[in-house]
Length: 338
Image (cartoon, rainbow, N blue to C red; front, side, top):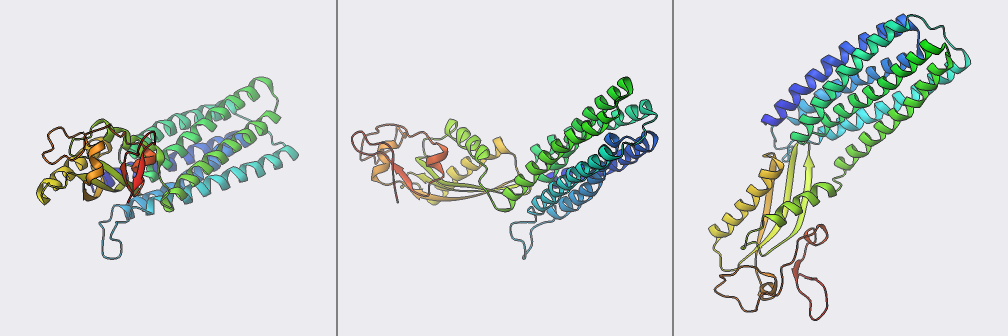
């Protein structure tokens, strides 16, 4: 719950900054008449709208789970990010439309020095706010905050290009460059919108986060205990900032319920130390079978029936399988059995 409150607080700052910078950029456009600066201002309208959507989604995501939402409300963050990505795409398309109009009827440019100064200040503030949002989002696994931060960074990158373009127009007097710069960065904006929309849909559809799974498998491989004979059927589902982790842990069959639970607690602690406290872990414990002896590294097992042959390294491929693992015969590689 503390993480959700922190996310909500950062998003409030994102909204406040977006409002101030939108006004600043509109003043710059009014002073200059530059379509490049209008491009920046239009993207800021998306910042404002998506900022409020993100704020509401984080408010919903912070609500405690209830009877209707037993896994909590974290999916609201994915919906927010999807809306934000869609708005960014529409902003990019609208900018392309404006560029076409200005190719046909180029506007009169004026007071470019003031425009450059105002837009540059806005870009710097955007980048700093975006960095804070992304850092907080990664810390608390909040896709809504990460999406907001990336949006602000993309706004900054387009602002840099626009400032460079306006300065060149100011120096060379070539007004058509204004439209060309705006057109170029409209495609940057479209790509950013696509990436955010793609990530949000992956979260809504519970798509496996392979990078996260690989990082988790590597950490568990490096810190596995002797009583962890096997680990399989590992799944990770994101609900906003909450990670739900399911897996099957094979332990020596002779451990009693309390001892097996101790091993589950140790596994849970290893995961939390690496990935934060916002984790729900559901572990099914299995007792080892005779064929497990060949891969069991436990040196003081009192009931071992077969000699240890080799340690099986956990990989993404074999740890997400829903079957136990054992060694094959002869030159065969790792086999899986129910």
